[in-house]
Image (cartoon, rainbow, N blue to C red; front, side, top):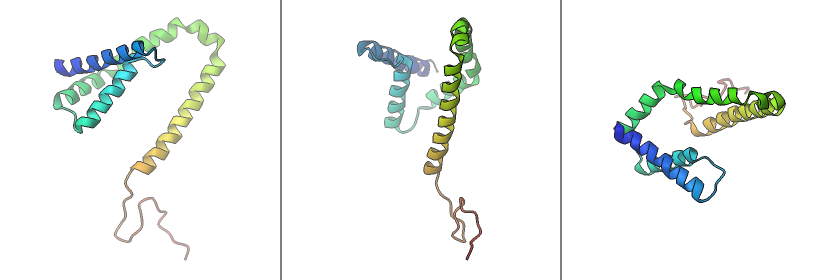
Length: 128
């Protein structure tokens, strides 16, 4: 499991280096996550040790929100001054994410047909 955590941290390190080297506005951990994603796409199947490490991280996922919560509290004065644009951005981005996820899932999920030839997404009644 230590090797899997090392792999994750090395991807993050490469992301930080790329972000700093090319002066990108994207955080290094995000670039590292993309690198890890492409590495997993190439290998087609993640190693068992990596999935075990990911499961272990997901069990303690709520702890990762503590630094974000502290960051919000330290910026409370800015939030008081700019609450309207922040709230608008949160609402619009949330709604956009929900809509795009629904559209993407409807395109990616296979359409199942029953023995009568009606797809699972059809209403089941014909007006003929």
